[in-house]
Amino acid sequence: MNTHEAKRVLETALICAQQPLPLRDMRSLFDDQVGPDTLRSLLDELVRDWDGRGVELVALASGWRFQSRPEMRVYLDRLHPEKPPRYSRAAMETLAIIAYRQPVTRGDIEDIRGVTVSSQIVKQLEDRGWIEAIGYREAPGRPALYATTRQFLDDLGLHSLDQLPVLDGPPTAAVFDPGSASGQPSLLDDGAPQAALPLELPPDLPLDADAAPAADAAPLSPQDAHDAMPGVPPGATVPQADVSPPAAPA
Image 1 (cartoon, rainbow, N blue to C red):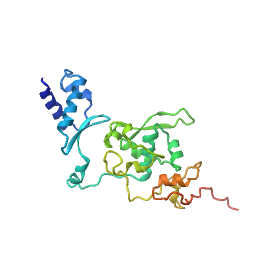
Image 2: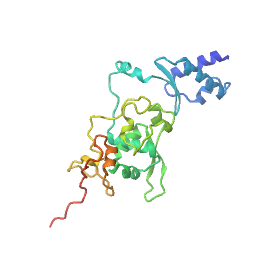
Image 3: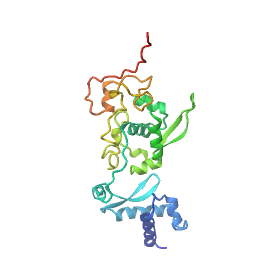
Image 4: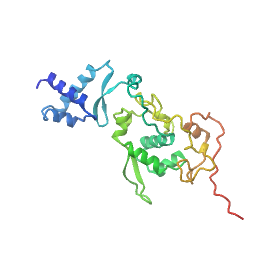
């Protein structure tokens, strides 16, 4: 098989693939008669062939795939007007901490966020295929260690964690705002109130809810509050939630 024919076979397989195609599967197309170096050369040629079109060939964490370019999204959405699922700011903050500080336990996340992490949020991220438990910390209770998955990188159009936006401060949900990761749309439910942050705790919030403050959480400094909630101006006075236990009846 000559190079031109091999490129046609490879291009067809990539277009028809339902999932990103890893190199080992590409080699099986040619019964291992085409080496890795030749495959990479063919992939580079395909990338150049599709340059300037509405579809591009990209390398992701789990393999290669053809995908629409970000600027085509506004047109493609007209074919599928249903909105993709969005996630609360609390869920996105939890995901951001795991992505930038992994592996981490729920206790680590609570120390950074200053609030408890509900089991529902962890399960939501696990069901989405974005995080998984990769082990257990040798500490009392052996808490699970969480890390992101290849599916997380594929969904954000990334090849590795090194392509995540560089942060100047603590990881927050803002990294998943529009334009922050390879032109991907925002994953945030922008209309959701920020009840997960201790700045806006309602007085009757049950202690097992996601917004319940951790018992050992330190008060937020103005700078920390500004990093967690961009809407709070630097230097502003931030009210702290009263988490002291109720007084015993006389």
